[in-house]
Length: 475
Image 1 (cartoon, one colour):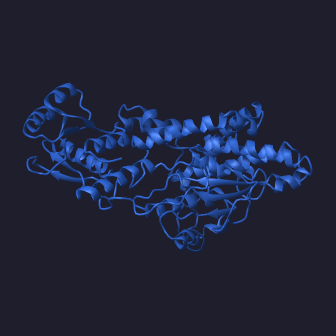
Image 2 (tube, rainbow, N blue to C red; image 1 turned 90 degrees about the vertical axis):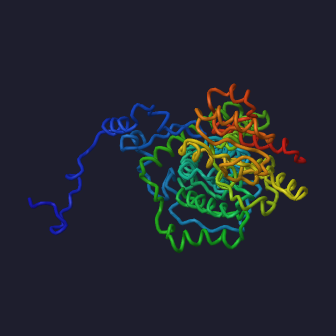
Image 3 (tube, rainbow, N blue to C red; image 1 turned 30 degrees about the vertical axis):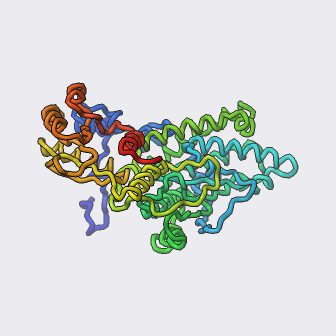
């Protein structure tokens, strides 16, 4: 047989890239980690409690044969309806729609959205089918989901929703498989939107729209938040007419990662559904407060992650536009009660600073004192520029601390250099002095006059609010 070359048309890339076992991949990764913990460094623990691996292979799809065997438009509809989505900017959910989107806005994670939505749908189907055929009743039920910024999670969520609903409807023994097809309307979420750095919202809705489309929505609403309605519509038009996403059915189908994630979300959501059923159904679970309690727990964890800056909202709790001293617009009221917007605490901090400046003619000035080790001071200056910039303060770098007009001085150096630097600066100024970092020997620094520390474990909302109080800002 002649050599495999482009000239003779016999390309056999497998011969040039022999199989590599999973064990070999893991061994290579561990060698690169140089002793660091594999799970801590590379396993992503999602809000839902899922463990997402750094890579997936064909072996991860074992046991998912029925999920993989379906085609778009065929039961269990994990691969979508087989039809392209419709642009639904004027969409208004009907009074009987299953509103999983409201759970999302209240702080629920994907597994809760799925489990509770399916439970609500089953209860609705049972009530409707008491007076008509299961097939007719199922066709009356519509689901509304919101998509947020977790791109792959949201894709898998919508795929799992259809698969779960198909399984639930099948238990009612409809006459036609089409009865199990979920009618799925999707909108971009409000939970992650901000009034600060408003045009980042346009970027957010673009990735959310991609998740909705690749996940297989039937109708999509891109909600404007701080940008014009025509831009919201044009996001979908570009994805359809310029990117041609309407030309491919289920582009994520067969992806080791997406298929595995779809199955994991469906499995965990089915457990939530079973728990609700065991408790008497969705209405009973709601009335008992069980649903609200579970969602409140997720909401609290989500709010804490943003306050601690473990979860980044660009332009809000990190990478602020320091030229924008206050939010530029006031959002309209949310359609849902108890709705969560993660940016709101930081927006209130910005607004408070702006009111203070309007009354005094001056924004609080934070001076970042650069001294010593070049690498450490540079990293800590950058950290503090973001940290204090999120409050709307004037933040400047300096190698001097006298006659700077500072309201707060932040020492930016290395841990070994801090004691001497703190003694020098604290003795020379009456301005409050704090340290960037979390050095072990804090007692010595406090004794020298240091009044606090800011670092990656700081609660930014609490810390910034405390300094606003110390600057004498009105509430």
